Image 1 (tube, one colour):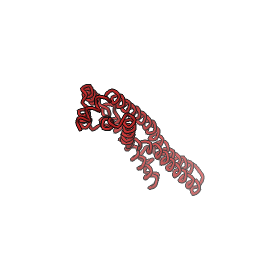
Image 2 (cartoon, rainbow, N blue to C red; image 1 turned 135 degrees about the vertical axis):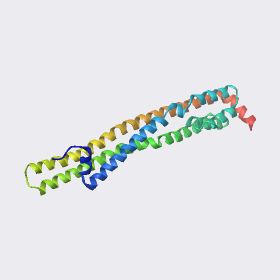
Image 3 (cartoon, helix red, strand yellow; image 1 turned 60 degrees about the vertical axis):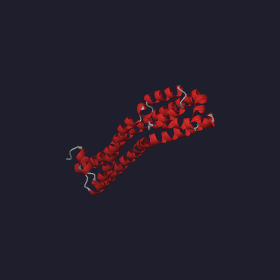
Image 4 (cartoon, one colour; image 1 turned 135 degrees about the horizontal axis):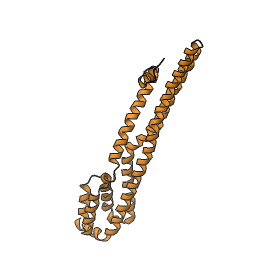
Length: 220
């Protein structure tokens, strides 16, 4: 009889099966690390800190565009870079500002989603790895069915091989489902934050266009 424990399932699946389990383990660890990283980095206060917004608005209320740009340069955040892009294009007209801010927002979105996109890769790969493990288990099962004499031992070995194979699929799906759900969760959160920053930047530009253009021109 074969004890049904994880070590037995992994190491009785042959060298190829063990390799599949190793890849599933690596994907599981990577998935966990990416989830933790995304919860930390895709955070509204880290991407668009309130202190930056308050400092920029204070500078704008004083009609000091150069100070607003300086504040953005001191804040290496996505919002800081988007605001700076908008301020640097004020003199070229609001349509140019809209285009520049849109491009800057797209770049920041791509950067933020760069690592998150690997969750989507993991959610697609792990079921395939599990399926390969299941196919291998089925191959072993039918090989034993054809080479062993009929009887209780043959039936037991058939059941064990199929069970080992199905465990691979179960683990693959167990990693894939949360990875897929959290990928779309973080993607939607990122898009909401980016759109909010884009709208905030354009609103600030609208409120300061007249005074700030004069200030930037004077500075030049």
